[in-house]
Amino acid sequence: MMVPWLKEHFSNTVCRNGCSRCNSQATAIMTSVTSHQLPSCSCPTHSRSLNRTIPHPCARSASGHLSYLNIWLILCLFPRTCVSSPSKPNFLLILADDLGIGDVGCYGNDTIRTPNIDGLAKEGVRLNQHIAAAAVCTPSRAAFLTGRYPIRSGMASSTQQQVLFWNGCSGGLPPNETTFARILQQQGYSTALVGKWHMGVNCKTRRDHCHHPLNHGFDYFYGMPFTLLNECQGTDDPELAKSLQDKYWLYTQMITLAVFTLVIGKLANFFPVKWKIIICLAICGLLHFLSWFSSYGFTKYWNCILMRNHDITEQPMNLNRTAFNILKEAVTFIKRNKHRPFLLFVSLLHVHTPLTTTEKFQGRSRHGLYGDNVEEMDWMVGRLLNVIDKESLKNTTLIYFASDHGGSLEARRRNSQLGGWNGIYKGGKGMGGWEGGIRVPGIFKWSGVLPAGTVIDEPTSLMDIFPTVVHLAGGAVPQDRVIDGRTLLPLLRGSVRHSGHEFMFHYCGVFLHAVRWHQKDTVALDKLTAAVMLY
Image (cartoon, rainbow, N blue to C red; front, side):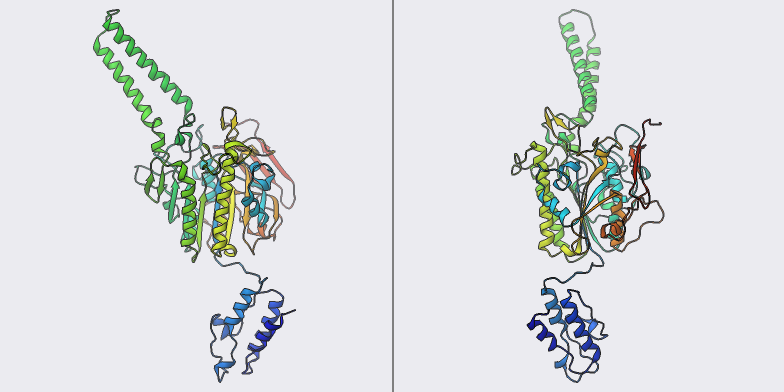
């Protein structure tokens, strides 16, 4: 039942010129308000403006016209007015690094506190079978951005090194690959990547930046072009080719010992040897040392850098400030672009080793440094959600949270576990098609559009973000290549029951490791893991 003052207001706004269309519209608005539906005016005159009164053709005076400004103000104040989905929503995509599915409260963890991520799942849609295209960073992220298996774009490796290991190396996401950022950029979106890239920088020279985020559809970039390493902190064992570095050190020590032995023998006349031989051996040893130490010894300066667009801002980066800087840049971008459609991809450095955690969060969890890092990551997610709410973007922003792959079971420091927990699933980071390495958290939230508290058990993929985002932005999926992702919107809204994936392929590098078969129109699901790999 309508409150008396509201009913009186509407009765006084009926068109006094006898226009039946305006009077019927006023009646319709009164009905729609009581049923909590947002009305739209079909009057050919009034529908042109919602913030002022336009003289009606049948009017003789301006005093009797329907004031749509007052009506819409009342509708905005009404407590349960429904909101229709905007034509071009904003996108906030948050991707954690190496986060295990068992590390989040809404996926079963009851010892690490993740209230903000749990709240996101409570108010949105949680995917229980969300699958990464690879169990390591570089190929998984390439598939996420392009909607294609990494083997299609050349981002899958046939060697033991399955990710990019140097900023200065030649290689990365090919310039002819189309990312969802590029399509949204063409649709008038303001696009930004804040955080980790790890898909290459240069092609032929150190300044061509052909693989740089700005050449893949992002208007703005702030973050690491590479990834976190133990070398960035300098307190743990080296992470890049440790066994190879150990061999180089051994060879260097052997050459040095040989030179000293020859020098002492020469000076003591123990055996005749020419100084030329000793000097040549010493020069060879020095060149050998410089050839490898100039790369591995200065990894902190080559790889651990921060960039803003094409410029280096920190070299080496200050890990104590990195989390704050990334959060600050993300918040600033949202505030700067709140009046236009935007795509913000926040690629967190958490929770990758060496687990850089600010002093505020150290010692807060029950799971050592890793748990502290997870809780700090959750706090960062909460700050991003808060700014979306404060800027009144809650109903116009699709929020997505996931991890690039499963937690690392092999990351340890003496007796401490530095990697994540993948719950009941076997395997982890870098383990091909094992479920623990590819099944990740996946959460969507879009207030007023997606049903809150929904849980979906159907198989979905990180590659599905590409067609989903492109479709919602009004763009078109490329027709000149295979897109392996499937739009998720019908599944998220509940208009369909089954995933668009019948088969999902799981690779270890370029080698097929497992196949997931989800039979159409059934809940049956089979996963076949290759027992013998054919090379």
